[in-house]
Image (cartoon, rainbow, N blue to C red; front, side, top):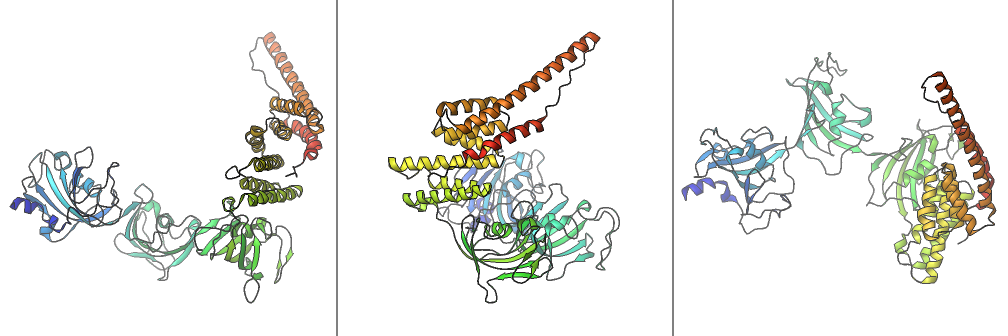
Length: 598
């Protein structure tokens, strides 16, 4: 009984075994341990009995620095080590086997505040050698309380930048390469001499531009808002060889010096590359509400100040008594850069937009309310989304509303197509199809109308793809959409044949033309591209004949000379072939235009 009491010094503080289970602990898909339950933890024979639940769901990782109280005993209850007796907890680094390997493995399974009793076989304890108070080949107990731990991150996975998390930040994500950060730091040599220090209010910079030394942005990208960390930076991520003198009057940095950096991420402003080419960039000044954005088709109300790079304001809306601006996104009602950026914004969001001339007013000089915009100007907008209303989703509509909206989108697409705006027209046709998907539309008459509308939109979408030189998409729309529904649809066969001719699949084009003429022998458009196809085939045959004639002539000559040179193939004049086909297809392209019927 005395020995049992010795072994369970810490367990006197444990909760009742019948209390709730430990939340979140899952070992090899087994249910979480309940207080008082014991389980073999892995194939090495480590055994764990939960005495008191921890808090949260996180556990330490290899490299972290936990602080624990622990009592080590033999199976007969003899204590061989105890931090309780010493009156102070023990801090160590996981992975260095400072106690023994099984001790590290045990702590890796624990949560903050947890108390557990571990049974270690000899191979996880002190093995055949034993240690002070532990005979060779002994099973041992460790009763451990995990008080806390400091997370240690090997930032570059090479030991060059080690980050010890002193204070955890907000769980709101980490900054990215484009983001603007505000940090406070003190940099010292390992002997404690200060070599650099930021102002107390912090310093702002864009991560992509770097600051002080290369280690700083690399470490900051692993941090969250208000996180504090200590960095140990090796010379290759600091200043390397050579003496470095900094302009702030602090001590110079000797060659090959490691640095210690006390770093705090005060805040950061997310920066978004809206167009993926850095020509429309959004810096978020204030996060918006919820998760919805004012994307395609939303009716938005915004206020903004628009200025040139030099700060000259050329337009204001919603400020100083001005009316706010209302528009529908993706309808070309404002400049492209503003349109695309606002489509990514939430209600209440404030942002600064930097818009290159490609998405602004281009090469034109434009007279605005307050100033003239010179050609090729980069524009800066300070924008706030006051409110927006998204388009109704198909599932929010009755059947007749969906059909009506699909017809409307299709007509909008037709207008855009006629105006040469093929990309936007294709989007309209896609939206129209979304409104008349199969689900929920019942009745034979309705289904017949819906089928006709879908097929018409797919065909018009294929026409857009041909105009945009996206031949594979045209083939896909004709094949997997229309011809799966209507095997002998003449327009689908015609457009797919056009796409095959553009990709030089002349045999497949010939098959489609034959099928189309079987369905409609009088079609002028199909007969016209049949003529073009025959010309292309004739040109191809001439080239092949010339190619093989020259090849065999050279082979015969080489044989007569006793040489074995490889025949040199003539290069096909692809540009010439493209030119012929482009001319002929343009003749018939307008004859089978987009379908304006419903």
